[in-house]
Image 1: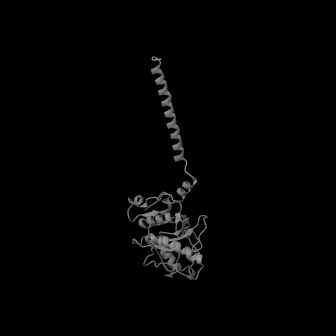
Image 2: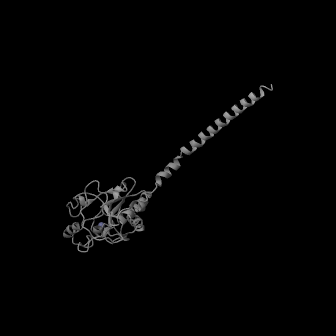
Image 3: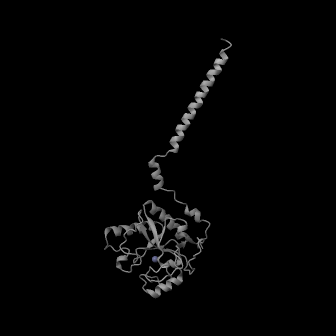
Length: 249
Ligand SMILES: [Zn+2]
């Protein structure tokens, strides 16, 4: 028995050790499965609040005067650039291609505003952004009314790459009711017109209140037009580039 005792102890050690390893593995599996299987609630929260890109750091290396193409930084924008078609008040094609550029700071802050709209379930539809100065003269010839077309001799905020013509679109892709169509020239399109359905007044308020937080101010006559107020850039007449790879210039 004395001879067998050490072997007995070794056997007990082996059984006990294996049991311990086995237990640790089982516990490990249990913990892993809890971590890797998120509940549906967690998944929904992830979709509702996606991490916003850090546009301040992404744009840091760009020159301040750069024009930035919005859709290249956020593919959730909807483009309906009317002046690249005949579906506009001049009934002529004024842009060679339908692209939306803004100056760097205005672009950065519109991108930030868009993140906020998306958390609310909306997306921005862009009708117009940067507009070359020469196009302003063509518009003025058609409609020399400063209530609706910026005087080209002064230059429009669009010619500075600092204005947006926009509306809101809901989760189903439907435009919110803003009371009039884009480029409707009349009192119904006046931004603060209160003689409109409550829903229209509310929708316009949502549009201007969120954009207002990011430096965009309204004008009296067009609910869709907002100008960037945080920095003044000069009027320019650079043609809208149509090469696919150009994302800023
Ligand atoms: Zn405008």
